[in-house]
Length: 258
Image (cartoon, rainbow, N blue to C red; front, side, top):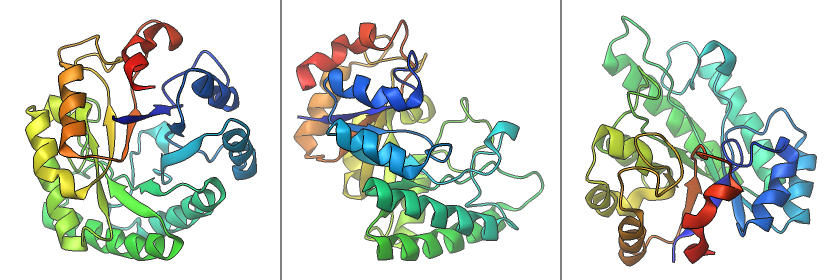
């Protein structure tokens, strides 16, 4: 049976962030993920995880200036020092939270910079990060993101992500396969999961087109989840969706998987 983790950046927003851990546990989740922990002391988040019997399964390394629209630095020339400092900070949090996965965001493609230059920067930064994460017992992951939600994001397709992972080494870095992004960009999500299964370290889910909970859009989620289970995926699936009308009210889809 698929294992689902509540994304606390997008779910339970009816409550302050630190109170969302208890709400997730009360709703039946055994694990959580979120975008960024850096506004809160690691010890405080760790206490919320411990008090509610939750496992932290993923969060993102610092993305640069999020408020100004930055969405990562890994592929950006001239930002490697900042990227590395961010990874070091993220690994401190990962140790405190016993988190096994760390998402490294590629960033937005700068105007006028050749793609080969960006690829070389990306590969060098990811190779360094994979080495540091490996020492800490953390698996770094990269995520292709669709062109609609984040226009200009450097990494868009699962094939692009797979090529980068093959170059770095699949034992050192994994694929964060977001079914929502894949459905928008490429479709045929079950077959793409099947193709890339050996390198998938984490999944995420939201329905299309609205990025709401499963069952609100165009995808036959019971079939998709059944197929993912049949393929043998045993990792976590993060619920990175915006509840359409309140988090608890939209959890009917989750009941069979508790």
